[in-house]
Image (cartoon, rainbow, N blue to C red; front, side, top):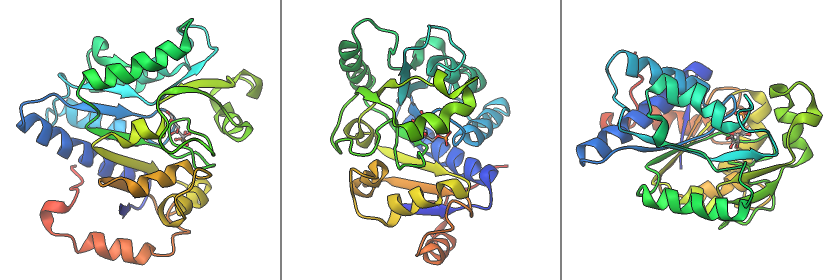
Length: 268
Ligand code: F6R
């Protein structure tokens, strides 16, 4: 696991965007189209902003890329502004110039949710798998909506959100009661199939979860800790989110002394 510590959220976004651009370049060099795994919530917004900037400046072309969302609420009416289908359209697809038919979100509106979950697994497979997956971390250690005690090898399925997650996400709704109780989420096994995983966290509220993901035991009680088993996982943090890491100085020293080809150049 590589740990990169930036100064602030904007620098976290710039590093993560550089990682996506690096993978996109390698995929394009191999004659393929990028398959980008995207998260919703606050953590990846600076990354999307940096990517959008490079797309606008002509430094990055994502017009042939497809995106796969991690999760979707169950129980919202179709077209609800906080449904992840809408959030991904606003924050990812439009600013990055991704064609609408290449935007994939689990179908949380389906009558048969189990079938929708199976279909989503198939859609990811049909696209050739995810090249690089962006992830946020819940204050309780979830990635996607894989809440504590999720199977470390789970696939896309229906999950019940914990009261903690519903409280954390209440800021997006008019009242906490409006946050749905259920969701469809990629499983931890699904996420682990991505060829690169990039976990982003900013702010002191994430420091305990980050410590558990990076330096704690691998445990279903902290689902994000499964990333310790991923061969290409990068964790990008701001100083506050990294503040509880025992080996923070080591990670900083290691990154500062990487050979140039391994670094993530923050494009300006
Ligand atoms: C969102 C998702 C969640 C969030 C996590 C952190 O698609 O899968 O795991 O990444 O809840 O949310 P923020 O970034 O809003 O703190």
